[in-house]
Image (cartoon, rainbow, N blue to C red):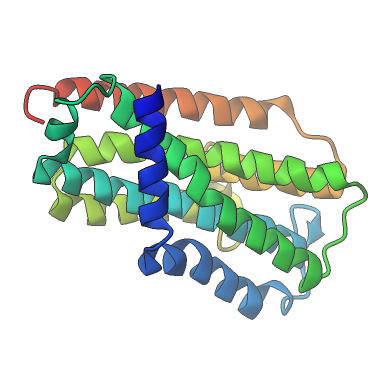
Length: 243
């Protein structure tokens, strides 16, 4: 476990020096919230648009950081032989995968915290209790691990040139259907209810609206995590002889 944690710390330090990470996981959500969040006088999911968009943009940054950048790095490290070299060290067989998931859990924290603070002090989103802020942040943070697992699955299965368009396409589908940019209705809205992005945003919206969180939403996140973890496990085992 010590080797896994050491690798995790090294990865985190490297990513925090990566300007591209901050642009896509922090910069984009912040800019979008500044441009749209407080300037739309409407409601979504029973709460103000500023509150809804705060949850949506925090989710956007966290999930994007967990999926697109992570998948690209895994694919590149596989191509460069870094994963093969790690197998010659005392690192446990699953240490690399665990490290990537832990790194994702760590690097998504800034985007979540910054956007929530922006919602509070710029969007004037007021919650009745402090625990509600932590509940929203924890939901988004847990949801990010779902896409961290998917990043492992994609990164192991495809080359770096293939990973970027695949990752972006997959993420855009989940972002749009999940209502991260704007709430959906009609057929697309009904389809979107089966996505983890929708579950995360709706849980946060329900916490803000004090309407009670349906157990099905939380269960949906757990089910999606199980699906992507299983997919990641299959991808790692399927490519074990070629990595």
